[in-house]
Image (tube, rainbow, N blue to C red):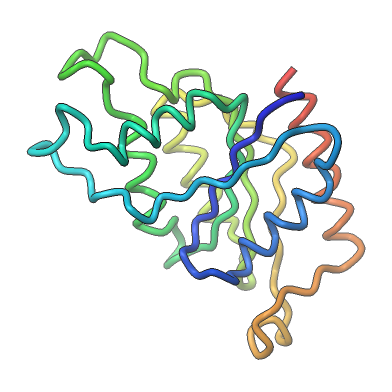
Length: 183
């Protein structure tokens, strides 16, 4: 059974993207093992503390290395990705051996799926920029399908995401496609 690591790009406990991830997890029941990345103790990237890697960074790298694929669920902040998600990816893009840029990082060839819930753009700009960043750090991004959810007015006022049947079907199709993409 494939191991998929979910990375939620929102730190809020009941965020819309955590809710979206939980919905995706239902679609993977019985066909993939899902875990969630906890990166709340990850320090900001800083070359002064990079080597030896802080314990939170070493744990992050080990967790990512042990996953067959990553599925990122993220909101869009000002047409881009959240800074704390960028921090995770920055740590993962750094060499494992001090300043040895010739050796692979844990992101080299790592298969990644992208989804997001947000405003009218349905996180489209964020997913576009994440694809660019992930490709640059040599991850293997599944270009299609991606799921972008435009949250309705009730979501913003009630704090809970309500998916349409079409959105649920798109997320299910993405889950199935990602498992196939993982091989």
